[in-house]
Length: 124
Image (cartoon, rainbow, N blue to C red; front, side):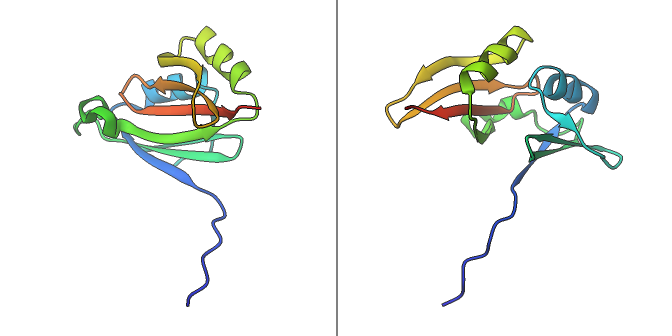
């Protein structure tokens, strides 16, 4: 039986219609940091966790994918403080911060392009 691989890091790869619009929102509102990026791409990180955005101006909008536009679940040490900070900066909040029966406190957020993600923290 083969040994399971050791995952070093995960990154999400997403198509966006505009890198300029994406950078303004992902960095200015959600607090991601820009990393060195090749032409046509925007590489971002939030505490070492990566998102790679590729500009695809003529592709299907993520918003058109409905529930399939959810791509990530970010578990944070202090989701309450993060939720308050991003809401104050104009985050597109789909569902407010709430305790869930599976032991997590979650907030659902969207991007202007229509990608959706969850930020969460464990309940005590």
